[in-house]
Image 1 (cartoon, rainbow, N blue to C red):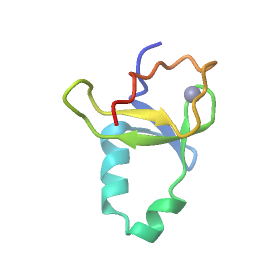
Image 2 (image 1 turned 30 degrees about the horizontal axis):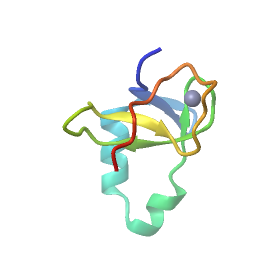
Image 3 (image 1 turned 135 degrees about the vertical axis):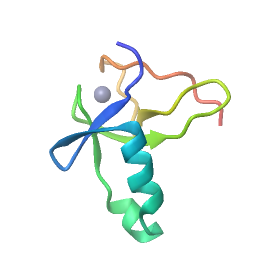
Length: 76
Ligand SMILES: [Zn+2]
């Protein structure tokens, strides 16, 4: 329920803030190899920074309608 504010990263649960700083600290090549996984369904997710209509959260790279996490509509 609700938006994903944490995920699994190499076996550890990390927060969205941590994930964003990991991503922002990575080189562009390294960024592709970062694997964030949904802590509910285990599918790959990526961190999304806060915007006008939403707080920072994780989104599934490939949409997973069966996951317990809900995602706000994409406006980009
Ligand atoms: Zn999920």
